[in-house]
Length: 384
Image (tube, rainbow, N blue to C red):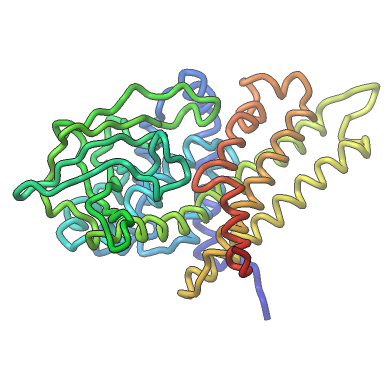
């Protein structure tokens, strides 16, 4: 028998994060968003709640949970605000997870306790200005010089890379050439403040305005050879597996945004009057919101199913791509409909749906565009 109910532990976590999002995040996040300011106090509270350590073992300061627990927390945060959700998502699934999955024991002991506590953040340096989704087009290079790696190149659109509590970026770099002329790509930890590592001023973004995003530059940047993460030449494969997991995280963020649109619309249409009636009494509005709820429900089931395969140790790449595609579509469609329902108020940043509309588009781009997800799904169907 298939049962989609959350067990008591998952439900308790979900409820706790829901309360935090509504009581702590919702009252203040609009100001952070308009100021384009990173919400350090909220991140610190999330750290004390154990959210940054959810999927990591207790040995390294984590909560001993799993990836579904992380996704449930992300969904509840994104129902209120995506900037806070993405700070958690990138900090865990992209920042700390490469070290947890592939790092040495020494690397884990050095970095993970503070990352799990939310006292520090890590970033994932994959995307490059000319490469975009094509990670195989990596131009950043690293060569061994004595007992150091020397790194030269640049990365773009890197989340959590320039905060006051960012402690490291794990970057992919070409470290040689394989048989047949293919690039050998490895992953290397670069601590913040390393000479030759420059963080550019933050981007001016359409959405996620309270999150931290920068371009990074490396010029004769030297780090110890022991900062290699995993095997030399396996960096590309490692990061692809990290992306598979992080697509689940972004799916949860998308579902949260989609559900937040439903929540806001249900409240609004019960109060707003037009032509002598509450607008929620008009069937045209009811149908819009019903479709929004159906999209959200379907997307949630998609990421639940993908997460269940991950937790069972089964292949889940196709399911992760399906969840990411369906959920990001739902977020974009719901935010557009919510803005329409709110009318002129939906175009104002004072209302959550205005922020939701601005935040939704990047969900169809990050962690592989919707076109890339379709390509991966087709490949799993045997279409090349």
